[in-house]
Image (cartoon, rainbow, N blue to C red; front, side, top):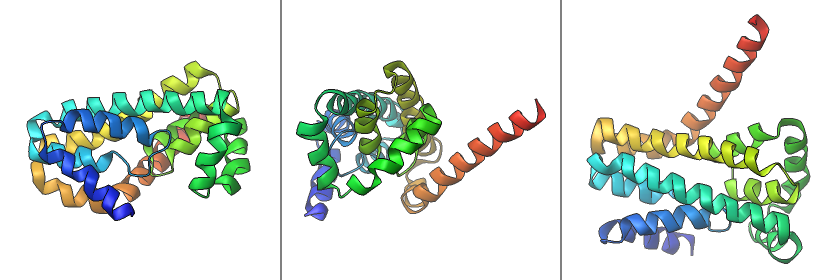
Length: 193
């Protein structure tokens, strides 16, 4: 079933509605849909590398607004909708872990989930459920999701279609390495200042 959904998502790159499909895919993925928007972003950007930064902006906007929907679900509809989404993805066992991350790291938990392959939808819903300050949530989401999608769009803009295989193969590893380096940089700054 997931393969059919994946193929359905990719087919939008061949239509004149690709930009709208990218926006709505990014919007839905941030709160409930299983397929990440990177798939369609890469397909659209590789087809027209000169528009890859535009596609990254569309994807970022859709994702952040969809994250706001996830926040609303957690804030107002956790028992009615949020728990169903967590059960559907078998993520209820991670709920306490996520709560601990929010209590300890707040905006960093959102930012890391927004940039890495960690299911962002879980963090958007839980941010609302745990009543994380919306301004912090919105800023961390905007920065991390934009960084993620502009990294992909920027690489395709610079290197064209030949970078597609590299991104698809190593994106998870690159995202984790970036986060580790970012945290290490903050630790070093804190140690020396």
